[in-house]
Length: 299
Ligand SMILES: NC(=O)c1ccc[n+]([C@@H]2O[C@H](COP(=O)([O-])OP(=O)(O)OC[C@H]3O[C@@H](n4cnc5c(N)ncnc54)[C@H](OP(=O)(O)O)[C@@H]3O)[C@@H](O)[C@H]2O)c1
Image (cartoon, rainbow, N blue to C red; front, side, top):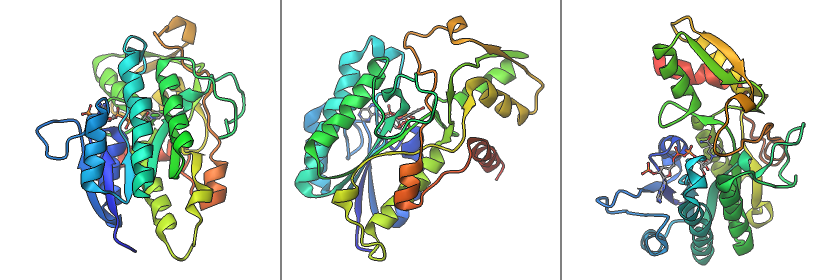
């Protein structure tokens, strides 16, 4: 494999943390975050810092795992969310094109309104319900407008062993309470952050391999990347609790009984057929991935 220099943005996040471990095999990894005591400082809200770090590092691959991800808070913080999720992403695309590098960026099921009843494909109509989804969609569009070599990987319902996520929240609440009430009328596919990182590594390996001789310009675009299958938050919670060492009752709630500042898509199952057909990459069913994730704690 030819020498790769990978700029990883957001190594402290759920996906970024797993990526930092997975992509080491592909080349030299320069991880940058917004802690300004580090040498490789980047603040996606500050365009100058983005340009400077990319021009200093001159990566062959830019992996953007950073984002403004506080979905409800974004409603009151729209300007910052737009700066990080849209403006910054456009600058990443411009810098990537200038260097002729490859940009890997993550997006979300929240670009859809959730009114569909069958898995969303990459070409289905987008129509975000809130600020977070709107800014993430603007980020996708900014990359597409610039062009170059890029992969936008839309994922959903991300959880893992670090950070803020549904798995860790349920595990914490199960220790504190004997009964949990969880929304049962929103459907999606919980996706372990490690599997997103592994799939990304697999994708990068194929793109770089002389065996495949892939036309990266032609293959650039949006791809859905989630675990397989479908569940509700309620059934996901039950699966998590079933593997805990405490008896906790899990009761179903409707979305109407659990209002949030941002409306969530009621149905956000993504079809992964394009990624499977193009690269042969598929993730396991969400419940199998959850088992593997929980077992990985024991190992
Ligand atoms: N979480 C989900 O359920 C979900 C679902 C669908 C799609 N996605 C997408 O998947 C990707 C990864 O999500 P995640 O859950 O791994 O995110 P996360 O755990 O919330 O991590 C976000 C990362 O972004 C960094 N960041 C935030 N603001 C920044 C700034 N101004 N400058 C530089 N870095 C900044 C954070 O750094 P600090 O730690 O220093 O703040 C952190 O490393 C995102 O694009 C997200 O939109 C997530």
